[in-house]
Structure formats: structure tokens, C-alpha cells
Image 1 (cartoon, rainbow, N blue to C red):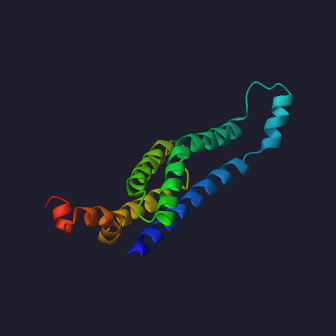
Image 2 (image 1 turned 90 degrees about the horizontal axis):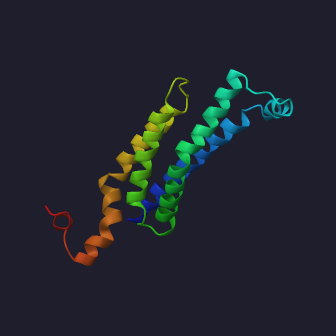
Length: 153
């Protein structure tokens, strides 16, 4: 029964690693030496491509920092505490998909599609019968009810 929750926790932590990896890649692809040279020269404006790269990296952090923290908490909750984090994981997936839609502006990033696809798969897995049974089994055991009675059916 706990196997599904541990798998879910590992998948959530894998998503954290992927999203953080994309953020690191965005920041390492910026030519920081050029930005420092322009700052030393007291240049008023950055070249447009460099400005777009910097803007994209900053927006990525703004949009994805909070959901990644939620994913990390949910993933650790599933791996270590077995049943904690279902609601946090669901909310984090929704926020990540919303962030992808906000981030999906004029320069369409290549990574928005895989992130959205992974979020959809994770939401489907979070709502699968086996995961929901594992997550809600303690609540049903405390109430001493069948799954149908616990859900009000």
C-alpha cells in the first residue's frame, strides 16, 4: 500500500530536480561576463537578446520558486511520512501549469511542453484509485468505514 505513495514521492522529487535543472540551465546560459562589462562601462541598456535571456531567467524563478517548494514538501511528505502531501502536491501541479501558461509568452520556451505534460500525468496519478486509497486509508481506518461511506456515497 505504501509503495504507491513512495513512488509518488520519488516522482515529485524528480519533478523538483527537473524544474531546478531548467532554472540552472537558464541562468548558466546567460553571458554574465558581458553583463559585467556593460555594467562597468556604465551602459544604460543591455542588448535586446541579452535582456530577453535575463528577463526569461528571472521570470522563471518568480513563477516556479513557490511551486517547487510545495513540490519538495509534498515529495518529502510522501517519501518520509507516507501519506502526507496529497493536497499540497495537487495544488503545486495546478500552480505549475498556471505558471507555464503565464511563462508561455512571445518567446515560447521549449521546456513548457514537457512540464505541462508531466503535470498532467502527475495529476492523473495523484487521482488514481490506488494512490487515493493509500493516502486516504488512515482516515477511513479511523472512521471505521468502508471507502464508499467515507466519501459520502
